[in-house]
Image 1 (cartoon, rainbow over the protein chains, first blue to last red):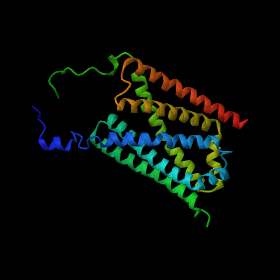
Image 2: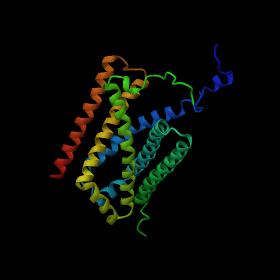
Image 3: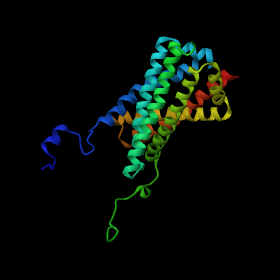
Image 4: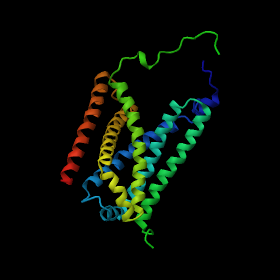
Length: 129
Length: 129
């Protein structure tokens, strides 16, 4: 006999109330990051140099800028999901946990947002007015 | 407070140290290190968006001895997290749980990451000199 209510069984969300959402998002972003990160690493290693003009020219190629935005976005999301679990595992007091998770989320949006904004600024060139 | 000490489940220290738990810990440690790498990636992109002068000041850090050591640390962390992550994805698909494939894939992930890091280092070294 199950002690779970019919409603809880239908929703399938368990005691954490979000079911497999977090776990699944971590896997989907992991799979997406395999080609994205390898593309980024190999691109940097095979560029003729890493000086300002070379990197800027490379990033201004439409497909490069597009993939770079995707990379930073998915990387930020995947990394947030991972560090969130680390905080949840090691920060035991509820108040500190809520506070750290909030600060963590702010930091990630800051880092990811700055990265994406920087790419767009380079690509669309409104840095030099 | 309880009146007497209740029995608790066995904690981590009673278990023998082996490849499985070592790589599990290493996966989390490299993930945390790569979270810092994301901040560095954003910093690098922002410096690029800031123009040649700010890019040069960021590049000067990454080209210095400390910067190079940190970059190779991140290269290893990334390659290990990638290979061990693929291992985790196979487990998620229900494959590779048997003793032999589990341990072999573990060694493949560590040694593969070390070998690929050395390849990247050799490649960068050959381009620099």
